[in-house]
Length: 373
Image 1 (tube, one colour):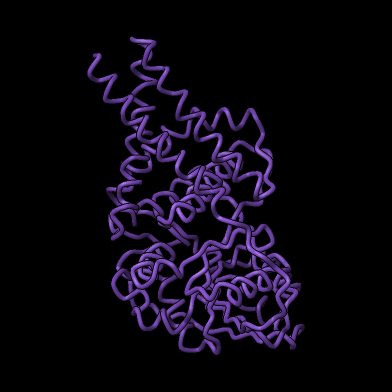
Image 2: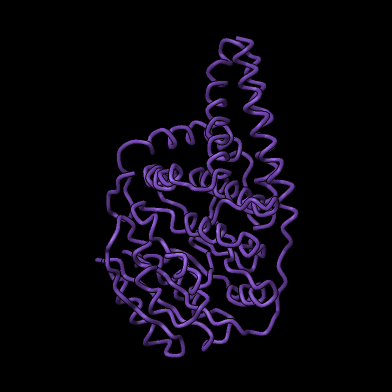
């Protein structure tokens, strides 16, 4: 029993040290400057499928972008929608003739509809800086202005930018917000210690010419998800120093949580399914440490019934996670409610282990379609 406890303690200690590195790295990433005159031209690619409910909010935020209209274009890629999405977009385009907007159809050629959509849009993009986002997002007014300043100032090849949830007080929403903030904190922390390993396709900018020269998604389009992480890996392999995180609240894209636990499980299984295909050994190592730490927490809850000493292992992980999550919440100006947060701390490891194990087998659903791992 003592040996088992020591092994568990070592794993929790390793995890805590990893999160401590992210906390240190988080502060090393400096907030980007702003207010550089508009100069960069952008092609904004937005795949969509049956998003009539969310599209109006996205379109309103596009119309409100505080950036010279002739310096950006919108390319909306319809992935076989059967609702009113196309009609909403056409109406918006008619009412906003000053916005350069293309509506094109996706052509499926792989196991990843979103990667297909981005690849189909790429030859039609007029400008060399591409930004990908999702149809269920809301864009901040200074979004392009902040990207422009970082591009002009730092001359990067890729910019990974912040994403958060439009949350409310329900436990399901607060659980997702906490989980998302932890991932965003780790993302920023990874950049701070010069080991970037995560990105989010809802707010990702990169050079079109480099995307094409690196063959886009050619080597990973058999995986349904990962349009962000695998592209990040390719850009890092080409020149890690030119891949930066855009740490600025005014570049924060807001998206929406899932409405049910069943939807959340399918979403997280989709995200987890790509992990075994990571090329970056550092990312693989992090994934293994995170899984083992959460597994130990579940194990410790069970063993604590027989030996209270195991319950002490719950404390360091909870404390170190809370520090990183609340740092990220502070940057993103999010409010975490204490009671739902405590419930999340208890449930989170069980949920994570469940997702990790179930994602290894069977299928997951996404946008009304089923996909194999």
